[in-house]
Image (cartoon, rainbow, N blue to C red; front, side, top):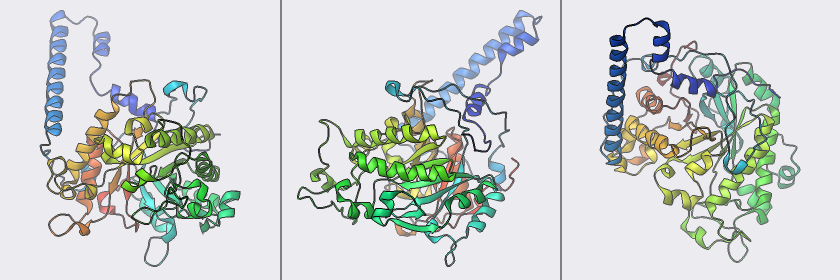
Length: 451
């Protein structure tokens, strides 16, 4: 099944990196009769440049690790001036990557990869009141560099937002069909060459945990666990919960989505979870093990359908092992299976003083570059040829006035472009913008679709 349009391939990115320096072999072939001193001069210059680049990279990494604030390139001029267009080359099929422990060894990947530059679509509010309509958002994508939408199909409460034929969804009464005809909805987006990502909120779920408490995290007395925020959570150790979530994802895939994005791919962060009842679990199996096992199961079920699988994670787990263990997220572990890993690196979500930044929200370029550089280093433990998720961060397109006077910035075109530029500076090429109200900053985006 290959119903997808052609997008820039993952393999193209790899080839582009290999072409980033001069081809001295080609130079030699074209100039076989060159005199020896000329060759030596080229060799000496290349070695000097290599050592200089290495020394500069090592110096910058040392400054980052010491917590010193990064020097910010001034983001000036129009957004068009901040990015050099990338030429589109012919599609090729990359060498199949190796998954850990022989996982999916029989999977032949014929999917076409893309560098998604997308926005979040709040299905429940689409076209209501003063909120954007679908046509408004399509026009935004038609007139900017944006090429993707992340669309709610299972929301934060557990509602299913399309007409579902899943018996368990119908049994629970979870269907709230804001999208009356999902295939028709997707077909309209495909007419505009939009890469379609289905957002499936995974383990946070008010609906399923009420209707099927045996699938929920529970208290020792058998009642459903409710954290301090009033949230209920599906049990990440429950294979029945896994099947329920993947069943919803399969419906979305069959409707025409290109990718399934699992959000809330974690447990509650509540300390009270330590005394909760997860049922009979294998000895020594941690929350990280459980979440990773679910991702492996989802990938095994979904990738052969021709669908991509991504997952959202807290960006703090890149640097903090403790944070990851508490909520069940391993940045490296999940990256060994997911196609795309999406760290939520919103500057407003970091503690004051983080990384040497007094108020991270006021330093979007420094914060994003610091986190994305940390991501590069973290994932370097995955060897060449082994499967490694493509990193595609969520960026902040909202103003965090709740932080208090003097502690935040009004986020506009410059702040949006600063985050995008930092993402590119770290070597990543895709990104997603988050605004719950769908009020996106067009001025921060490139306008020419023919870049």
